[in-house]
Length: 195
Image (cartoon, rainbow, N blue to C red; front, side):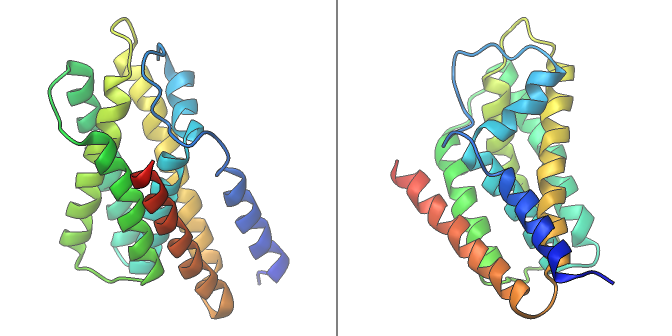
């Protein structure tokens, strides 16, 4: 049986991951290896909030969405990373990233229950923008494979923290706090769009 203190421990652990710069996208820095790829998603509030929100929402959806929604995000993000690394054009990347924070936050706040295919498609679109930004920032001499594996693992870890938070707060007022958290994520998305 889980005590309320252990629920607060999970919440505190997830909140520790929310520190960092406002944007994870820092053009001009060489991204060379697995460790850099692993650390990069934790350096920006936009990526952290969107990834945690994907996990929160997947847990709210439940069933197969619990793993299919985050998996869709990670795999589509890898495809977006390849597009960015290759320099193929994708318009409105930063707008798509900020919009993902806003929309995912709203979905969590409303505990929206879209069909599984629509949920996967929606996070897939957002993942394309996030992945593209990561891939476009990679230095030409970078190990695209190792860097990509690093940012994919970090993203999956952020998804898992959102899932863990949501599962720890399944009932009562902790579940309502998650919805308030979703509203705060959406508000951050508004701020990112305005910045």
